[in-house]
Length: 465
Image (tube, rainbow, N blue to C red):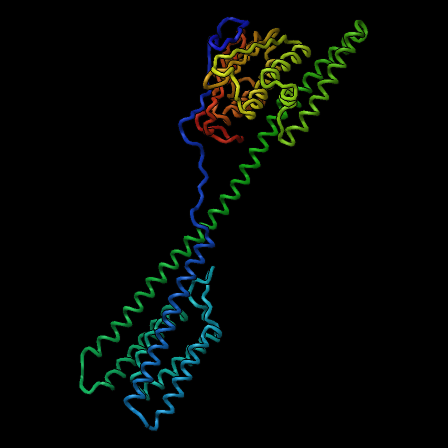
């Protein structure tokens, strides 16, 4: 760490561990469907409405054409008034279909029409009037083609196929009655038309059913995704609060405890120094309260806000932190800053400054609680492409490879929180330590603000699980 200007109060540690965070791989991408399910339902329903409109227009054209053909070829016959009346009745009945329950089922109105009793009665009346018309005038037989669609849309598939077969047979009989001589095409054309219409409808219905299932799956997936995102947000907020509490309230309470214990020991022998310790503990209490209010509202750390109010920044905040830690004891903390970048190291994002300050607070809390060090050094280094903070101490040290394992030392939230904070900004954490030889913690944050590989949460990345 000498290249960053870190002053080491101990011999070089014998072991090191690096917690690299890749910045080349993309971060987690939340799948977002490109089509809103409501839009998909609306589009499918619109297609169904257009097809129904075309079929309805075709029915009225065929009915009008058959009536015109009959009136032209059979003027003045006794059955003409009946034909006209039945044609009008059939047209009226067919037009009343939507009002009598022609409502497609399914989300968005894109499923088959509901086979309600009223609609079944309506279909029976339409088919019955049409049969009477065909018996009186076989030229009305081809009105059966739109009725194929109506039956397929209304009845269950097996019943609809039976109805189509009966209508087709009736059409064949009517055409043979009209023909002056036997024509084999009259036996083949109606079944072919019926088969084609049925095949097209069945294919469209299967496509619509497949689309409905896909849309249902999409809606369910998006609901599950929303629930997962809510859970992850809760875990991330819980992790944020745990790290903030560790780096602010826990650190402040630990300092207060040591100061008050020291004041209690020397209250009779050195009252002036004891009262000074009590005043210092009171100052830590005020700062802890301020920090608690700030992290609840997700504001910048109090130390950084005070430094910015005085026209400073991260350097001044770290300097003040080192002075407070030294005053609290028992570790003397020195601060040093270096700039090896064009522009004097300016332009560090506010979020990165807050993160580095929190990391330093957590690292110094670890030094005070676990290291038993007499001296510690904090070094801030500005480079062209990154900012580095080194925290070195001459304490008891530990084996980095055993930290975080079940048999290793329990470091609380400290080291995992430091790694999580650095990971948020695509940073790198390096720990160099050995038993009896102190510890050097180095955190580097890139200034290019790469996307973090993993979001802040209680889950560790695969290589650390």
